[in-house]
Amino acid sequence: MQTLEELLQEAVGFHGHLCPGQVLGVRMALAGCRAVNVVDPKGTRELIVYVEIDRCAADAIQSVTGCRLGKRTLKHVDYGKMAATFVNVATGRAVRIVAKESSRDLASVYAPHAITKSEAQLQAYQVMPEEELFAVSPVRLQTPEEDLPGHPLSRVICEGCGEGVNDRREVKQDGRTLCRACGAGAYYKTVDPIYTI
Image (cartoon, rainbow, N blue to C red; front, side, top):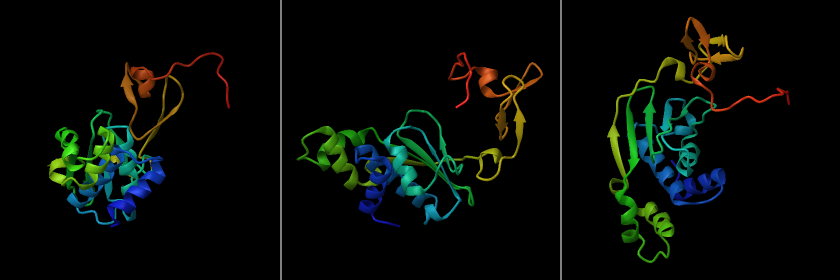
């Protein structure tokens, strides 16, 4: 495994800047991989990571682990929390790691000469002991077959919009097979005229 400094540089290259969230994400990924016994995360398809936030840390976790949405090894569960669950699908071992709120206040202890709170966190998160930075909990998690990496398990056509739906994401409603957007409402609203790009 690379050093923290090397991993931070890779994360910066991927994300675009160095910030406290990047440091937390890199360290969280290191701790998560170690906890589920994944030595070479970029060289295996045995690791799945569920990130609970769509901020800087998620990019850092992706950079360190090589897990990606397109490879179906990175999952986003929008809880708005600085947390992630690391799963070794070969062994079933899983841990959830959450950044402790107390670590924000401890930053000034580990970086007493920092001028701003963000600068203190940036410096402190690089040297703070893991037990002060994170809460690590073993968890039980069974990843459904349709969420595992690989080819789609199924494909149906939505009876509402006519679009294809992969991997059992359809819903049954009033005897019809619908995509989730038609069944429960979409995050978008189609406007007229419909055109193709």
